[in-house]
Amino acid sequence: MAPKFYKWIFFAFCFFYVFIHGCWGLYEPYDAGIKVLDQENFDYSVFSQYAGNQLTYTEDLTWIIQFYNSWCGHCIKFSRTYKALGNKSQHWDQFLRIGAVDCAYEENRDLCIRFNILGTPAIRSFAPHSHVSSQGAVFQVKESLEDLVKDVLDVLETNKRPAELQTVPEQSVTQLWSTVPMSVTALAVIIEPIGSHIGKESIMHLLPNLHSLAVRRASASNRMLTERWNLNEKLPAIVFLDRHLPGQHGTLGLDAFRSKDPVEAFSEAILRADVELTNRQHIPRRPYRRPAYDHSPETLPSPQRYPIQRSYMQLAESSNINSFQLPPAPKTPQKADVQDLDSAIVYALVNEVGRQGDISGKAYTALQSFTRAAVRWLPVKGDTKLALQSLDDILRRRSFISGNEVLSVLRQSGLDMSSRRIKWKHCRSSIPNRRGYPCGLWQIFHTMTVRAFIDSMQSRVNTNALGPDGVLTAIFGYVEHFFSCQECSRHLMSAVRNYQRNTEFASPSEAVLYLWRTHNNVNMRLAGDYSEDPAHPKQYFPTLNQCYDCRESNTHSSLISWNESGVLNFLRQFYGTI
Ligand SMILES: Cc1cc2nc3c(=O)[nH]c(=O)nc-3n(C[C@H](O)[C@H](O)[C@H](O)COP(=O)(O)OP(=O)(O)OC[C@H]3O[C@@H](n4cnc5c(N)ncnc54)[C@H](O)[C@@H]3O)c2cc1C
Image (cartoon, rainbow, N blue to C red; front, side, top):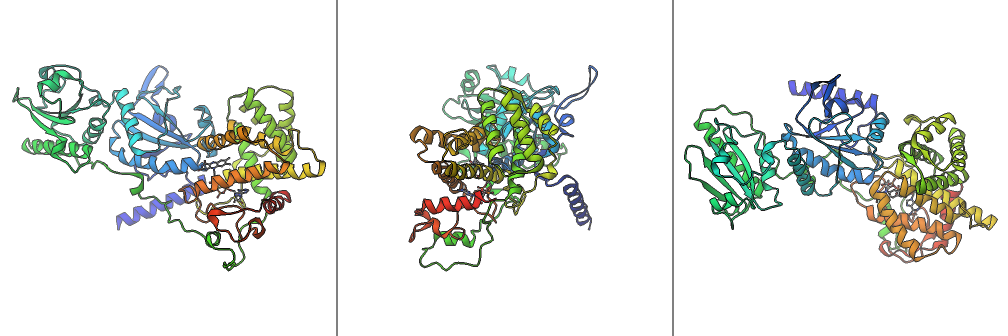
């Protein structure tokens, strides 16, 4: 009865929280080992507190904190590894906390600006007792859980908390015992090759569970100990010592465990010795905190995991056009929507440009060109149009600007900058934290190039900054300097650099088609990815249902032969008639 009651209370709380604050980001309060941080709880959770010069509160904790944007594909993908890290390290909470801040959440805006988060995902580590002015140390985002865990262990070792992670210096066994409290009579020393993390990870799993035994680690380069115990060829190994039996030791090498993971093997062996000793001494045991040896991202339960179901449209893609029976009318749009363009440009200016420090040099030129192209080619209206014009005016007259100044220009022009105005129509997703902004940004890019192309056909002008080539260059400039999905920007810019080196845009339509091809390449790279919205699977665009004339006949999806003049006509219709 009682657990059910608490469950209902929890769901009621969740409902009201989501109702008041909007959706949670990629992490939830019940994700094991991850603390959701925000503008309100960040400082008192992470930093030491002072009243005047008086230290009033501090904890001996290292914090690893990820700043992310819940719409960013790489952040979505990385969330599984990060959750696995939280899971694996959840019992290390006496020394370590793993946190996450959603920078896409409006209330966290100032927090992310304060830590100068311009690209996501970004991770910082904070040493124990850090001052509130600390920016933390940059911590590399690693794709694999194993690498991430190793880096966390290295940070803990550097921070000297827990002290047991430090390797013992060259010393005699008597000196080694002098580092252990007199009440402790048994000692396990893990000796391992240089660069190995077995000892560090085993110690982190062991510390919450040890009662009678102390544990230390030594490196293979510690000649005094390895020669004393004759271990040179047999590392890694555990050496067990008893204070009352000087001169004696017992050794366990990995070969004693063969089939097991070394961390699990060593931790379990030391734990068994500790249990035996504790029982013998009749010491009451604390509850056992089961180490998470093998929580890989794939084995984690996740509310957002879904079997990827391909829609009938993809069946259409893979069927022979001649034999394929067209399914019922598709629900896919036949036109981009101005609401997506409006939301995306406001989001870009407020949350990407507005969060920069000083903008000068190439970044300034990129912003200038992008704003000018947006004023000319985006069919937005009202306060958005006015805001773009005001920004364009200022940028023409100056040579540098700060993110804060951009925000005040937007504010003074009367732009409604609240998150309430950001509404997605065609870019709306079927599950939380998908689509939205990056979808809207693509729509902006295609709309601007297509409209510039249509104009160039009428005026026959393609050479100026507002022609299709100039617009495409402005788009690349924005992606390079301002798009906050770091990996997206890196991928796109490396693809574009190759292109620019090899080819000149031959005709005005080439800029439009180049962007269309580039986007299709991104679609194919991401098809079936964890960041995909299952109701909007990534596929070649336009689909067969959207444009029958865009493909040459008798082709299969894997080898689509496009009719590019058909594609161009379709894009003109889709993006040019909003
Ligand atoms: C410049 C850029 C680079 C990105 N790189 C990455 C990355 O490296 N990794 C990652 O995980 N995410 C990346 N993203 C995000 C990703 O491409 C999607 O935007 C995101 O996953 C949302 O997908 P979506 O389903 O809304 O469709 P999107 O791909 O965002 O497409 C939005 C809409 O554009 C139209 N469209 C689709 N394809 C084309 C096309 N070829 N030509 C014209 N119109 C088209 C469709 O109507 C579609 O619904 C990037 C986004 C941008 C803007």
